[in-house]
Length: 140
Image (cartoon, rainbow, N blue to C red; front, side, top):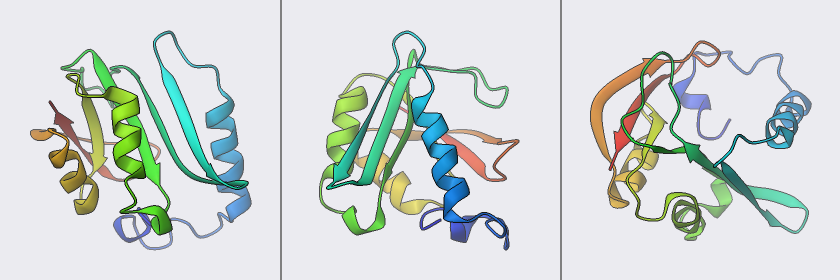
């Protein structure tokens, strides 16, 4: 909610308590990964504070990939931003290899972070069916 709350339509999270979001992410993180995919999570004590997933590039909302590898997702909790944790996760996930990723339009902090890691917007966008945000593709 910290990152996407301001970008989503007002009331998007209404009726979704933390229990529902926790259950969703527990399911996502427990799913078996396809060949070549990887994920990691970082904890502070018992609390998850960051995660990253990467693997073979996928068709995204009907848009074919342009790289073989994709950074599927990366998240760092607000109170851990600026600690270098995000950088470590990018290096773990895709190192300096050619890759693509999708970032929420309007998430300027993430776009700047990915630019510092050699990614550039390529002019491709898509709107997700389950999450009403326009996403922009970045490639390197």
